[in-house]
Image (cartoon, rainbow, N blue to C red):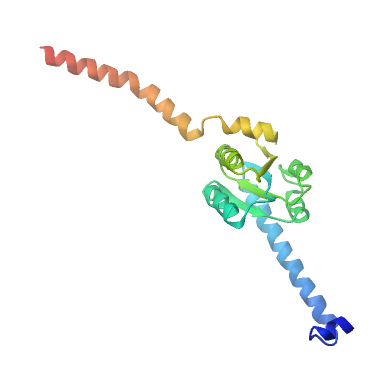
Length: 181
């Protein structure tokens, strides 16, 4: 009590006010868990990274790069994230959360692997731990391998090129044939 008086705080906080503050924190935690669970329902991938040693600016840069690809990228207390992951398809990710981590709940899992691999390559303080996509649980190496695959958009472009190429060749040959006559 003496140290409280020295800092200018005298007396103790009434019990009902302390309890009320605790309940508010519980409500906020409950709201966060609910929000995470709703974003997990729409996700096709969850990725766990350790961000120790990253500056706020670097973390913000990563967040901006991930923004169009994820519904959530957040540094969350492991206990709260584990509660949100419970009884979902992504529950095995809970085992990866041992140290302070950031979690990306992805709407485009393959694109997220590309961003995380590139960012981890440029910023050694970011450590990819693992994740889970539709196919199953992914290690760091699995994520790095997936990051080398072409994205769905790139594959669609290649297929469109393959389909259009014969028709365009035929059109060019016909045009040249018409010029000769």
